[in-house]
Image (cartoon, rainbow, N blue to C red; front, top):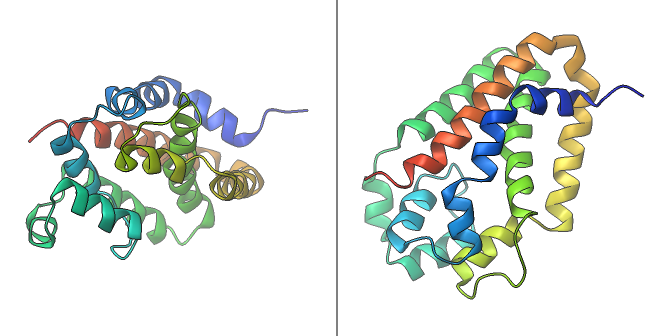
Length: 180
């Protein structure tokens, strides 16, 4: 049986993928040792729905006001991620958009599934891990991968391009949390 298309894409981006899932941020998250300022910068710049209760509770615990969230400019990786999502959408093709989504979700499942037990005491750290390592999230990632496995091979070069750039952006996203 041939290797899954998504495994082939990941293997082609292995260096960046491994750097991301083994990043200092991930290790500090597992240990419950991400400095509040770093965690705040990281969460403020997440591309997400603002009404997510985790974010609101985490921002309150980290002392991040709505004014600060609105005032903090996007980092280069956040701007890059928004741009790559627009670029993928502009292709009007399912496969490139899936390539970016698969990276965004699967890479997080990969690092979160490596978390040692017990999880950190601080809910800001523990829930961030749990949000990315639970049966519903795993099922979502499995669905996205199966879809990319199905449609990606017909657009292998285009998918590979988007996939590798998305991996690089995810890595730079972690890095940006440590810069002020």
